[in-house]
Length: 325
Image 1: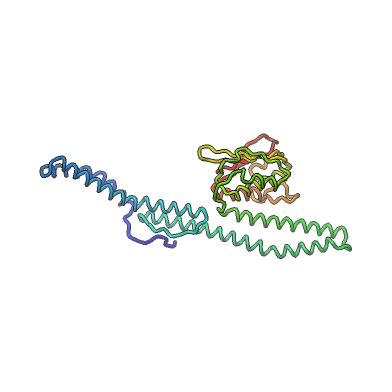
Image 2: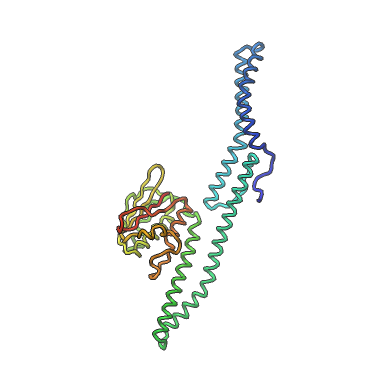
């Protein structure tokens, strides 16, 4: 475990808490004795005033120690964890607090660094694999196109070439989807957006869908780039399912924003409801579906602290998703 805190002696938590409890117990008793001792020399009013000032000073000292040894390090650790969540690097904390808090902080930061390293390794591996596969896939596509375009080739050879081209195209789509999933795990879509901000672009991008918006000015705690990814994939799925209309409803209650996305397609069968967010699960494999669209959306939303679920709707009346922020 790498040291991330300045190593200085600090009292253990048991001593801090025990001393605080002891001070709470002893100070009133000492105050009573002090008043009795000071009264003959200064008078009772002055004696009480001196004791009150002393108790106030002792309380300030005790409060500072509790803030310095417990509250401040815990807040610093919380701020560091929040920064790591947004993609910032793991940095050392300047305040150690008690040994127990220091140890917990070390463990939390080490865990964060380990998870960050694993994330980077997955991203690097995915980029490497997709890059290395691009060249052989290009060669396969070129060879298959030559076979398909050969006038002397038999129908069987042309059919085989077409099968190879379809398989190559699917492999390209899967690699692109894998890159999207890895990219979606990066919390890069911080900000605020509204449905009205992207409506015109969505209508132009998906002319076969009639968009209906309710709550277009409700502020959603996600950048337009992230909202575009979510709505874009759900719109693509709706079109692939034969839908002609997509309803977007945004609302806000109790400090929580919710976005419902509903289409008028055939809906999702009960047998597939539990699997719709599984990577590579698709019912349209024969028509080029990769099964990665909803996985990309779910991964991206989780990285932003949001979630997506399959909301209940009328059977056979379209798919309905709820995005909670």
